[in-house]
Length: 385
Image (tube, rainbow, N blue to C red):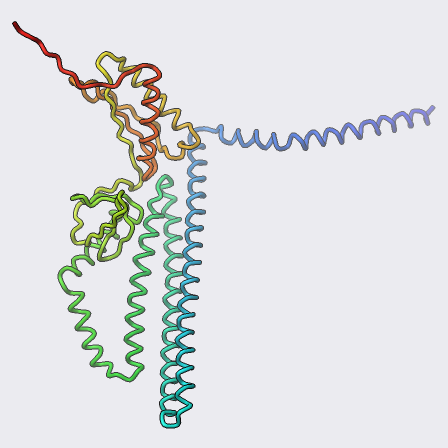
């Protein structure tokens, strides 16, 4: 009897094992759905926690963008260093070839020793200056990337520090290369055996006359002020007045270059830049106005614009361009031309034009669907007999 009970218990245990295994399989299949549920619960937290999560996601995205940008710059620096060293190597081979040719002729063989000695010295000089120049470029990009990443923590909704890092990097590296080249030329002339005191006095006088001229000095001082106060940076769309408007394509201590909508490059000396209208600093805005006819329902028109803006903000193609929900200012003007309604949309920098075009299109299509007519200028004429 006990053997029978033991065999029955063992059969029950054997039947239980497959059930447990099947349960484990079911649990394994449900694991992705459970993870998805937990992820959804993570985003169903309080508004403060959602803001914290969004800020951290923005910081991470910006950090990755800056790191990728720095990586591209470092690769460019390596390519430029390689090309510069290849040029120096070509000059060295040319000097060696000339030396070999000079050694063939006994009358000028002594000159080959002088040539190879001076050539090797100058080649070593420019190789060292090239390495210093490119190591400086690496250091500038690294420091600016670290500064932009840390500064972005205080303002996660703006790409301002990325633009400033690009601007400062370009200006600092160009000035560094300029002074390195001047130093290399001066040392090369000195190594060739010329009198350094005479050359220094003549060179200093020439540089002093050029730099201390009124226009260049004003340009340099104004350029320093523009860069230090962050009036604009590379990629900003600015307006200096007098038809000088466009995207900032180049900026240094002396000039600022703008590219307008016609593709024209406008170069302006920095001393002539006084007032600046920056359309893309930190954030931008769509200033939307529409006039509806007198006999139309104002509340319905406002409701339509509100719904269109909300629907557009919820569109995956446009939601990342919105910073805040649309703000309806209401009726701005009542005149014989109709009823003017104004709406504002705060967007990411330089996104106000694309958002504005799409919003106007959607509003017009929706107004046509519901039958609300835009205003047409009209006058009432009374005939007195």
